[in-house]
Length: 448
Ligand SMILES: Nc1ncnc2c1ncn2[C@@H]1O[C@H](COP(=O)(O)OP(=O)(O)O)[C@@H](O)[C@H]1O
Ligand SMILES: [Mg+2]
Image (cartoon, rainbow, N blue to C red; front, side, top):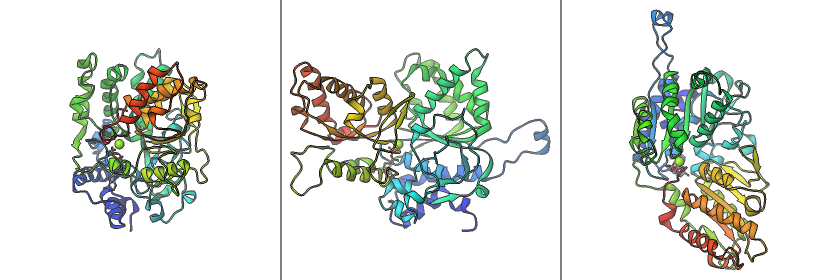
């Protein structure tokens, strides 16, 4: 391959993965690949602005971004990551981040082997969205090697100038709110913030565009307006068509300009695949495991969770020897995590429910992860009511946001609580735990 950047076009990388037998060639994904190819090529193309225009300070017209929407598990995140990973732009995520995990690693367990590189040999490893807190205040990242799955760009292959960033929509909004607080008192802080973005960013990839918060809704029209005015290209995935965003929200009319901005600056494309790949993986075996259900000779809960994790994340990075890889940082608080991968997190019960945790921690976890693995759920006999109470809150938050829960517990849901004080609340929890095992629940779109 003479030019690795060209070879990394989304459809070329997709075809290579299909050729290796890692991914299914899904014709429903082809229109999205065509759009991503268009963007990839436009971003590699040197901007064309005449001398006169340049003297007048005119900037080249940025290419239209992409708003990829559709049902859950259809491959939206997979495709936008394929695009992101193959873009030879500097990754402006915080230090230690390498961008997103390679789809090669997520779509098939053999993915990481197919790259020929063992995990620990990768130049920079993805450490999950929880480590991006330093952007954009953090120091410039420089142009170290950027991991793009089965390709690695060296400094000389990266295009100079502003880079690329990929994060979860909710995390991005949280950062914007924090930046606005930091610039409070300025006449138009959004202008300063947007300029700062443009200095560092050419392409912004946001996973799971979803608006439910009135604060976000009120901010988005101006935010997107500034973002596009600065020429940042937006690539985003969503379960919702733009015109249905924030559909029943308060003061929705003030949100409508945000929809108009998206429609003007992004190609809006429905990913209409017949396959729900995630559901397929989730329903391959149970999502709720008890020692009683464990037949002789089967792996114990720990080994079972490990194999479910591997199956669901298809080899996405985690600690090599099972040690905690983390912690996950939420609003300045550290939560020990067993493993993190794109959209997935694996916790021990003790880390989530036996410490000083609050509903806000669970809301963050449930917002940023569509799949949570939880090991070591004990029986509650009244002596551990504090943990039981936190567990009730945790399940409420996961349930409300349609998070897939894969868990190992000491007993079946109705037998978990034998105390007295929380009998009523726990009835709801038990019933939710049962419902959360159903294919209907597992097929629901994550409400991030
Ligand atoms: N063409 C494909 N072949 C094999 N696996 C795929 C394909 N497209 C997506 N997947 C896998 O299906 C799972 C769900 O895809 P994801 O992108 O997370 O869905 P969405 O973002 O639409 O909810 C992921 O593990 C992804 O790697
Ligand atoms: Mg997704």
